[in-house]
Length: 94
Image (cartoon, rainbow, N blue to C red; front, side, top):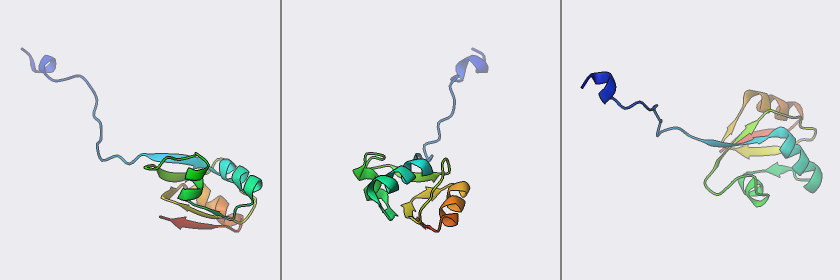
């Protein structure tokens, strides 16, 4: 039997990959407008059903933040960091 027929034909799955639950800035802005929140952290996002218990949170840069908000998350995109800091907020990495 030739080697190309013996070798399995499926792709590689990286078991060490870290998956993030993405939360965009427009979602955070809607939470701030609705609840007048100044600190957005993992417990707050979980309370509102945006992430589950075992998720790691990454803040993504879609949208615009208008108020100064302190955001706690596991990871941030570069555009999200720039938008948060330009609005007068604070970025805290977990």
